[in-house]
Amino acid sequence: MKIDFTHHQSAHCENGVVSNLLKHKGYQISEPMVFGIGSGLFFVYIPFLKVNHAPVVSFRPMPGIIFKRFAQRVGIKVKRFKFRNESSAEKALEAELKRDNPVGLQVGVYHLSYFPDEYRFHFNAHNLVVYGKEEDTYLISDPVMETTTTLTKKELNRVRFAKGAMAPKGHMYYPIEFPKELQLESAIIKGIKTVCRDMLAPVPYVGVRGMRTIAKLIRKWPEKKGVKVANHYLGQLVRMQEEIGTGGGGFRFIYGAFLQEAAVLLKKPKLKELSLEITEIGDSWRDFAIDASRIYKNRSSELDAYNKIADQLVALSNREEVFFKKLKKAI
Amino acid sequence: MKKSEVPQDKSNLESANFRELCYAVDENGEYTTENSTGWDPKTIALDNAIQDIKERIDAAKKRVEANASSPIDYYMEVNKMDLPILASYVGLWQWRVKRHFKPQAFKKLNTKILQKYADVFDITIEQLQDIDKNI
Image 1 (tube, each protein chain N blue to C red):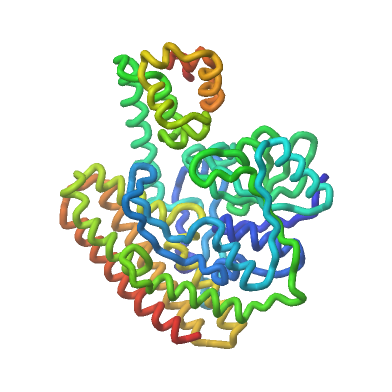
Image 2 (image 1 turned 90 degrees about the vertical axis):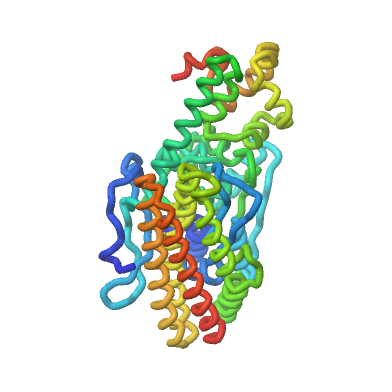
């Protein structure tokens, strides 16, 4: 069985799956639109926790939340399942495929055979769509890949039942109920409000204040942790900002694309101006990544270099503070 | 980022023959998408992280060879895991897995538990008991 499903590549897996599933049902919703309505832009530093032996900084909210917010705000109902064992998960999946219903799955990245080896690490909140099965092979539309791909039954079961933090437990989902017409306008406004609230939150670990906290830490790293560890931390920070799934510049460009679309839908040219501004901020994030990479490339020990990129980060936080205040006023 | 500025550097993506999608602005200031083969600052960060993992594997190997640790320690690093992840995969308490890091405790393990570890690491029990047999 093979469902007639069109694969569209996206920058980020969660938005991509949502956008692709909706397009299949005949709703033309772009990836940036899902991202913007789901308030995907974020910044958080989680103290006391280490992943990959480095502090945790994220440019996105908790996995799954973008989809949840998006569905709530436009009025779509989503049916979700989790399973105890592989055989019942497999049965449920096959029943849906027989009904011509492509489904989204949450999977672990580590055992995804079609990913380059270097990108396979233990991260359990990746998303993909299954749109068919031929003999023992499932047809897969993974939104970050350029084309569709396949996984054997054994491989698919393995990634569906990956273990560790945020274990998917076979998590399967698909939209079931749609309103007559998607109410994008009010949803966009809600999405923008949440982003402004989060980015301007009065806590030192979130939003622009979170960036300032990280900047302070960067200044201390080389002395406190030694150059080797400091460089490792910095490398991890850049990976979070630029790795597959962010579309570059820590999601700023996807957000720019969203604001441009929103400007037309809401008939607010001001949003188009702001789209240009967030694009420029995104460019500065990339400059920050370039300068940070110079440090960890040369493994240089100049203490001054760390201070300089910390200054860049503070400057970014100041610009974003101004930006989100303007955005809040604009809607 | 302008569409023409989307980086096309050489990267590890090449091995799997895929390019990632980026959002960028075209000549008219409109947002569009463009594929990227990779970007040096990212590639260097990833290479450093891989180097770091290699160093951890080497260190674990030395510990096993010095009989200061069991092969489980080594295979855990090879599979890019840490203690909570490994414990969750084998379905044992963390303190038990940690105990199996001791060569003495590891030697006494029964086949059932050994098989659990071997399955998680995708190797045979023989390979599990002797890290030199790992390819």
